[in-house]
Image 1 (cartoon, rainbow, N blue to C red):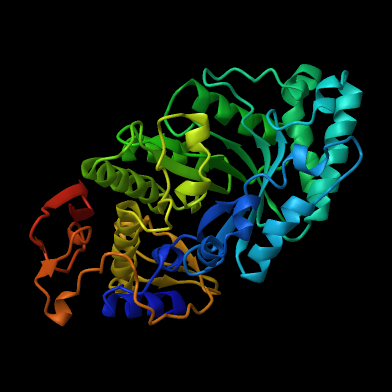
Image 2 (image 1 turned 180 degrees about the vertical axis):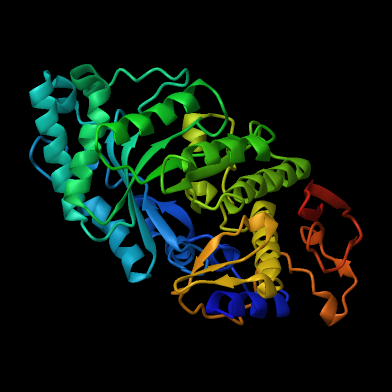
Length: 432
């Protein structure tokens, strides 16, 4: 039995009450569960205590500090103050860095809009990427090299880069990024590509074009900015992930948040939000090449949503007072269930010299690195709804938001008063 399986068994035996999101996500088979962090939050100590808790978030994305208007506001003059402030905190905490974003049509300094001609724009792109990716060389697990190149109808955005270079600006950027930071995974990142449609189809073409040009692309990031009750179905999410996974080495959900279209949200709305978060995480768990899930900040007070969509919001896992929502508990329940299933399926493990494969249908035989680090269990009383006890401990009732059924479930099937056992998918029933 490998370390990750031993840990999963320990969590299962303890009722999974002390585990946190990244702990459970890794034990369930992901590389990380992460969050974006922006500079305004760095001075909020209570917020940062959560953001830098590796048990909660194993990965961090600097939300804005590495973008063009922050790193090269004036041509040829580079500043990394904002980006370094976030990356340094993440490195100190031992968290994985997803770096973001080298080329984007938005948050561009005005001087970029005045660059004309293929040669001039090529030099600008190469110089910018060489300097920014070069500054962070060796620190980033992955780079979002090109961000949001497409309109929602699948057409290319009329960005300064596209006007000067056409579609060629994308492989030019990827070649420059590969040269500047060779060890980093190179991603194309976009939103509204999580459902089949014109934008998804053109994003597939972007990947094909990069590869046919001889440039390297390693992954596709699906931002996953969703609306409660309108999140794509599990089947559609998995279909799209599989489409990208057929072309690249890995995929990830990179900016997940699920906003309420009306505020204040009702209890029913919050329960639906929890189910929607679970659906997205389940799609990643069911896709072997999906390496992780990143939320686009974890606290409502730092969410981008209210300013962009007035009257909407509460999209994150923690509220404005840094209290966990049902969506948090729902993810803990999901990851706990998968972790427990993996722990109970060690008899099906097939070992190779470097990888362990677990025959659990809901994890799609996800490979697990044998170099997984030890994770320290804490005795601190959690603020989440307690996880249900296992049958080995004699409990017969599952608390609200706990698992009450599904494939491979071996715990209680009766819900506590005030909730009922609801099927979310064939593998996971939850007390809601």
